[in-house]
Image (tube, one colour):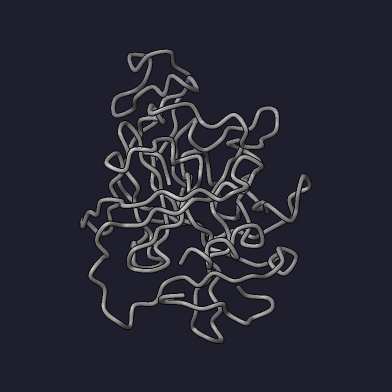
Length: 273
C-alpha cells in the first residue's frame, strides 16, 4: 500500500456533466431494479446540495468525450470511481481534474465483479498530482456494511444544479436548461461540486454489495442520477480521519439512492493501491 493503510476501526470506516454519457450505453449487466436509472443515464448533482471544496474529500472530476463523472483520490495517482463510468477502453479519452489541474490516465481497472453489481473502478494517473507529504486521503476499510447502518455520511458529486420539466429537445426547456434526451428531462448544468449529509440504511436487495441513503434528508437533499462515481465519506472525529465507504451507483430520482459499499470493493481497491 502506498499512502494509506487498512484502518482497524470496527465501526468506522459525480457526477455526469450536463451531457449524459454519449460514449456508449451504460452496461446492461450492471444490476438495477425496474424504474431505476443507472447514474450514467441521467444527470443531476445532489439536489439542494451545499457547494463543496474538492479538498474536503479529495474529489475529482473524471472527463471523457461527451460526459464526466465524479471520483475520489485515494493516493496522488489513483482515482476510485464507478465502473459504469469507464465506457471507453481508450486511455486518451480520460482526463482527471482536481481544482483546475488536469492529469491524463495510464491505466483503467474495473472490479472483477463489476458485471455483477460491484460498480467500482480505478483510474491510474500518468502523472501524480503534486500534493504535499502530509496530504490525507480518504481511507478504505475492509469492514461489513452492517457497521455502517445508521451512520451519517457526507456524499459528493458534480453535475447539473437543477431539474426542469419533461422534454424531447432543448427547445422545450427554460432558459439555462438543456434537454437530456436519454431520459426526457431538462437539466441546468454546473461545474460546482456539491455535497449533502445523509443517513445510511440497508439495501433490501443485497446488503453485502450495496447500501442506500435515507432520502430526502431534513434539508431536502437527494443524490440524483448524475453523481456517478461520487463518494460517501464517513468522518471519524475521534481519530481525525475520513473514510470512503460508498461509491455512487444509481437511484430513482425521488425516494432512494444506491451506493456500492466498501464491503464489496475495499479488498480489491487496497490490492490495487
